[in-house]
Image (tube, rainbow, N blue to C red; front, side, top):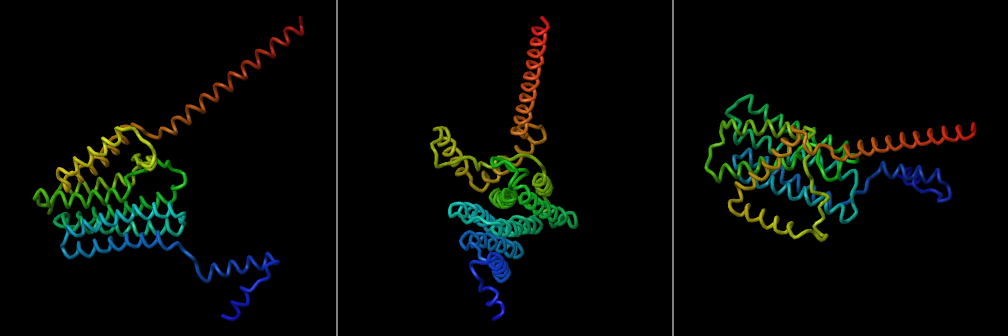
Length: 295
């Protein structure tokens, strides 16, 4: 330890010594932003809570825990940006917690709540959901700096987990028996597919509620609230599924696909045409100059 302290004591006028001491400090310990990562830990706590209660057969509490995890997942990123405490560590830690809260917990919940009667097929489809969720998060981390802010590529895993949680609440409210439901089996497989798809889903990150917006946005917000209030457990499931289905339909039909890319190609074509036009004018001017010279 004395040798380490001796190495850390450097001459401020020696840049090589200063750099060596800095690398040593990085190996000894690492400083992290506490607040956003603490909120992310709450996300993981609720995910673990959901797992425990799903195993205990208390599926409603498990669903509520997944919703709680989604709330903290929404908060951690916003708090990090507001406090200017975003970091690579926080991004990686958030993804690891999301795998537990929105991948493993909903997968186990689906199997125990509805898919167990299908036997091997049931747990394989549940695993498929979890695996595709993890792949979706890994792809997002790799493409985070190049994808459009206003759109997600593939259904976000928190939304997929929200659909699972709201389906438990809706089935319970309607009094339906989930055990051996082919509808829920199909839903699980489709959620796995749309998470790893390239379908574009609106993120609404470009919508700043702090700015002045048209009056219709307020009317729309009140309307959405009233629809949910009619029967919250059922309407939340309907709204989440509508979001997932519409994104998939638009993706299959090619509607709204990569508008920026199309605009970029159009601008490139226009630039190419303009360049060709300039070249043509230059050729014409050169020809006219030669003709005048010969005359």
